[in-house]
Length: 231
Image (cartoon, rainbow, N blue to C red; front, side):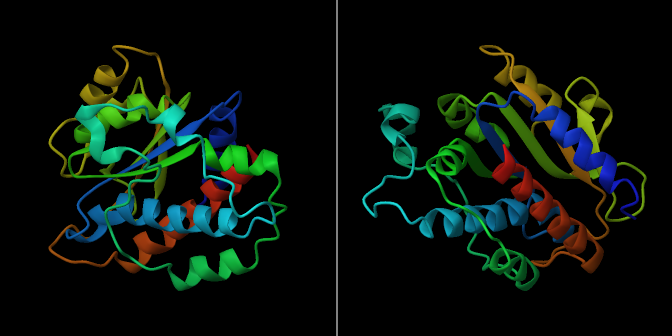
């Protein structure tokens, strides 16, 4: 199922070269089984990020990013002022990810805090276009989109698609195609964009991921967080 995992890791490394700031957008409907993998991944990454930042040995008064600089005052997006990670779910940290977190041996220095503060995590749900304004305000150099995608592959298989070929991928349930979403974002800036799709197994009404898709999602979470820590 994940025989291509080494290639995926290398492709992400190549994509993140010269990355100044990273935004990860998880997409999907978390009440439709495996379609909720995007929000699930964002939720777990958010908890990992907070865990590392909260275990910093630096001054407790240190603020988690220059929020006023990144999210300037704007009445249109007043709801998002002083918000960095947008995670609309309340899923607790998964047991497998919790084990990974407890094994982390991270030197939380100023450089790492800066990297984490330049990593934005957004749960776009099934209407990611609603977050385009916030994405532009965060102004990342690199964007990773994650969604369940129908690729006629084995359930749980992870596939990476660059932004120029994303139109060939059948995306799950959201209203705007990702190709149009990307075109809209790039009206003002040519972002470096990568799409990571996972082949779903079950898309019926359910609040849980199927076991195969959860295993793949957990592997991707740990891989992405390792990359974030090493940026």
